[in-house]
Length: 254
Image (cartoon, rainbow, N blue to C red):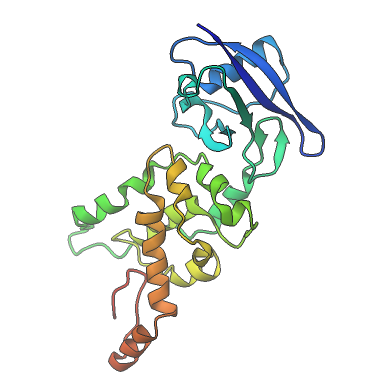
């Protein structure tokens, strides 16, 4: 088979360059295979983060021809023959070296999210949930924390709005706020701590998700609607005032 031309980001933020490599192709080859060949043959010191090579650990996130992707799930044969393939680190996060970035900020955000606070058990000692409610949040648990959605989000990437927790954590917050057993009121935290209002639903995060989670439609929009109803809808304020009731995190009146 023909060879592929790779253009790879090398160095640190302060001092870097793009170096070109030629890589022999084989059937079923992915971009991560090409990086491993370069490491073995031409650049033994090139830094590349990876683990499972099966699209389940989220470690090998990078930007391939400008699009955030998992290198282990990006086949080389999807690019036109003879085209130079550019591989760069995720731009959203501080660069360590070559293709490796520091994603620790995400774990600091994760610590701020209060865990599930389940309601008391039923009289027989069990919990009861409708299958519909379980199915609704099931897709959120598919997240592998590759942080591609965090990387592509223009609120974080272009505007550096660190007040916005990002799509990944909107997914986690949705998995808790929509959980049928959760009693923690997360609406004010969504607005004031995690910045759900910053998202303008361009759906770029959904487009790059390797687990096909409908981040915008199924997580972010429902959360924004709940926050808007609780804090910004004058008709909702009037209705609650007339009835003397308040809205909880599930959107129900009490």
